[in-house]
Amino acid sequence: MMNLALLVGLLAWVATTASAFDYGDALDKSLLFFEAQRSGKLPINQRIKWRGNSGLGDGYSQGVNLAGGYYDAGDNVKFGLPLAYTVTMLSWAATDFRKEMASLNQMGHNLEAIKWGTDYFIKAHTHPYVLWGQVGDGESDHYCWERAEDMTTSRMGYKLDPEHPGSDLAGETAAALAAASLAFKPYNSSYSGLLLVHAKQIFSFANRFRGFYDDAIPSAAIFYTSSGYSDELLWAAAWLYRATNEEYYLKYVVDNAVSLGGTGWAVREFSWDNKYAGVQILLTKVLLDGAGGAYTSTLKQYQAKADYFTCACLQKNDGYNVAMTPGGLLYVREWNNMQYAASAAFLMAVYSDYLSKANGVIKCPQAQVLPQDLLNFAKSQADYILGKNPRSLSYLVGYGQNYPIHVHHRGSSIASKSVLHSVVGCVEGFESWYKRVEANPNVLHGALVGGPTDKDEFFDDRSNYEQTEPTTSGTAPLVGLFCKLQVVSGKSGYHQGSPKPYNKPPQG
Image 1 (cartoon, helix red, strand yellow):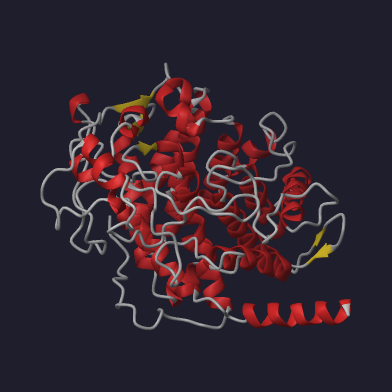
Image 2 (spheres, rainbow, N blue to C red):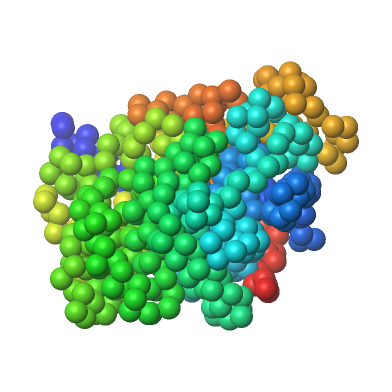
């Protein structure tokens, strides 16, 4: 009887996983989310029409133009660390899944999303050793519930300099610019070169003047506190090596492998704060490509840690695994856990490609793992996000028929300026819109909400920010993940019924 029950369950699982989801539609919606998060003067081809211009005077009182960039989540602050990580993830997708993204006619949209961030970084890098790392104050911003177009809160900028260093934020920004230079190289070589100039300068700044960015910008500590900057220094150097092929950067990650923890830290998380798993997989690619040379021995140590992370995700690590919910979602921590599942799934899709091209396998403590096993795991996390979970709920807003409708997001929850022309004040927003029981008036397409508890429970309530607030750093890894899965599922092109995309790669 038990065997029969298992067989029935297996058959049901196979039936539901056979191309059950339209990853192309999910990809389309994910890219739309970044248009909803834009700060600054919106372009003529803006597709999210309920948004308007905002933050045009950012930095003005301090004599610097900091208009542009992205709001990090459901509020109106531009936090530099998650913003830079967001751009790195989008750029990694554009670089490693270039053919797939082009075949789906989405490269233009992704490059636009990247450029919206990199243009801002260029403006924020006002001197080789000065980087503006934040605009707005989280404390005052959270006292108000107002559209970005109506902001009355502080738009002060906060900078890093030699007296107030931030190697973590500067390192991540350098990584983002280096990765973006790779993304743009086939389409706009001059802009790619400009990004690389800034990436090199900012890395030099991060490496020479060491320090935690949230010591330099204390108001960031409550919201995006940094656990350290060693990983970001290695991360930036790894991306700069890939972008330049200059031995200096490869020698840097080898010479500093121990002191900066690259070959010492065995991690079970990849996020805006912790980049070690990304560093380890990125450097394993060098080894798998046969380019290790004199550095092979140390690169193999990086590879061992990359494999540890992989085995932990795939539950093959002899008990030292990443926790999972009963429904099969990776579970790292209570607040906005979905971002960790998304980033791990993206890494597995990337590593699967690297291994496949090198005919490689991973020997986990409990089993040998093939490249396809990594991709299958990545698919399981994507499918959970899109609705294959105990609640049959899509955690990607706007995808499918059943998704969160009370998203913790100011702009989404208040009627658009085109509908409600009058200003919605700081307190009025709470009274008239935050407390409403009705669904948000503006669908925040492509927003990955915080997600369920460790028991797969989810409460769709606007005040439940741990579960219903989305972030750019959460959605960003999904772009590459959905792109890869759409192509391997045997489909191509747009979701039927979607409008023809604007796909001209942006110029510098």
